[in-house]
Image (cartoon, rainbow, N blue to C red; front, top):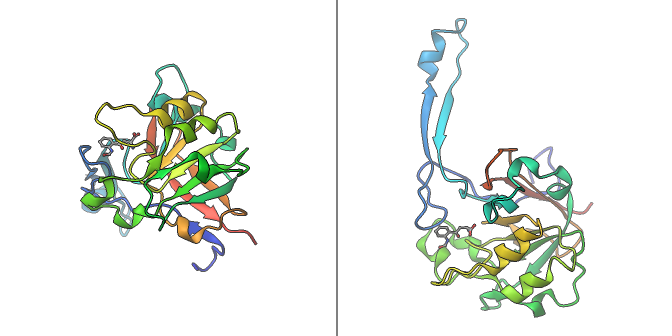
Length: 225
Ligand SMILES: N[C@@H](CC(=O)c1ccccc1NC=O)C(=O)O
């Protein structure tokens, strides 16, 4: 436990230059915009800074999809209210260790998802950053996703590369139904094994980037007292 932060669980992977998050998408490139050396020229003796520029896709590291990722008519990152992102009751649905890839209607069973961040713990986050992470990755079955808007889910997260099964035809039923309903999706979570099934609070908040659909988040859970 980190001193001063009792009861928090980190749900994010570390982002570093060059790392690949989704196979086929480029990793982030970070370059110094202002070096420490150059900054000395414009500051008082002993005062220096560094400013980096970054070129990266929004789907980098642990990231959140807003409605705009899937649909052109509104719902970008800048429009997401904090109520949709922060301090939500966390409901962890576990398939980790089951050997099953799909999170199904049966896994959601009689769970009360209304108002919750529904966080899918598949265990594949252990392979993040390796090619195995995206091979036959776990995902949320389409019929299970279709239930979640009517059942009142507030947010859906998964510790895998994609909430949807990646198929050759490119259908993405979970993104389609969840984002149509304005339910944000978080992908590439980690640490869910340390979060209880119920009782924790979930936060995953991106910057308010207008005209952007997806961006990295600092996602974390606060454990029950
Ligand atoms: N998870 C992201 C994108 C994604 O999974 C992806 C994007 C480009 C190339 C590969 C991807 N995923 C898995 O192989 C999304 O669907 O929003």
